[in-house]
Image 1: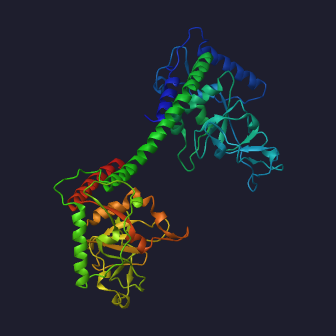
Image 2: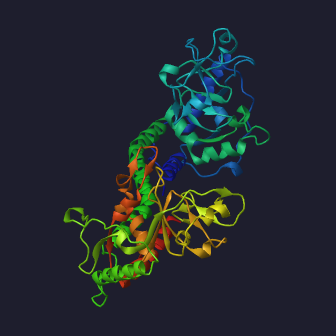
Image 3: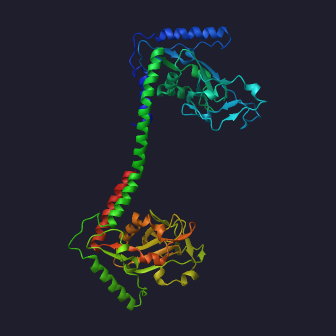
Length: 497
């Protein structure tokens, strides 16, 4: 149950006479009703209020629920006088200048009170025309246009302020103001307000319809006990609401935090168990180096400059003994930034840019295309291949975003990368494992520390990318990690849905 639902339930108990005990010594509502009628007649004779038109009698069919025998069903117009507000004359405007004549708008009416931070004032030359249309602190306001059915009280400093035509004032005596407000806020009354609102054209709640609202009238002393009980419960409702909001925030954040934890566990060797039968990463690393030398001798790849040895101070966290710390440049056969091409409207060969490289996959819907003349100057190795890793290398907010290129996702078959994307082509290492590594908090939380440049334009240099430390597992374990990560991330996505 949400906090608002809990509050609604409490108000419903209150309006049905089930929130507090009845006291046989209380003066019955029938007597209170008679006193209110006598008071209204007195005010009519004194010319302070106008005589109301007779309201329709209450029938048995109308009564929505039983109430205690000491209560009485009445029409709201029988126990209150409803008076309207007034708009300022056409062609005139309210002013920020303090003329001493405050004007309350519906937009000022919030949370059962009135906000005073943006009050406007009635100009001196307009005030005489609307001076009678005020609201007093003893009254209750009800909004009748725009946001309809909002109710509340007037703070002392706005006693006697002018009232908008989009709200009415309920004038009464011998009623508890807070109890009246609580009852008007209940679903039972708000439902009536919704039914009584005119739906044709601009929705409006007419005074004659407000007068017809069915109202369960408790004895005055019980009204006070109801208010005291609700005020006693309100801090508990607020605590419940705060706890509910905190839980909702936690629930919203939980799947994403869980995803980050899964990736971090994965690259630390804590997500799947190690298998002593797996070939250690040290042997895999030696094979990669041997294959690289072979490819260099065959002229298929270029010889890299030696990367600095890994020192103990660089190692960020422990890994299993079958794993090995390596630099990214040591386990790839190609790593290079893309180029800035000439573009054409001829849709033949797309250029993958940083905006195409999204966390949810490759998006080539708005891709640009390279001219044939520009493509002619590209070496074959620059053509993207399935399992190439694409690493965004520039731009605040996008740098470090990583994706994997798959040829079957590209209807144009051939593609190249632009100068803002680094292409990483692993050698005997799972691209998906490296993707998980770059997507992990270890990299993503530190990506800007790896970059050069200003706040507006940061850059992840190619040499920096080559030197990034990678925790390399045995190849079989890489595949187990990838499978487990995929399984767990799918479960996280179901939590979000």
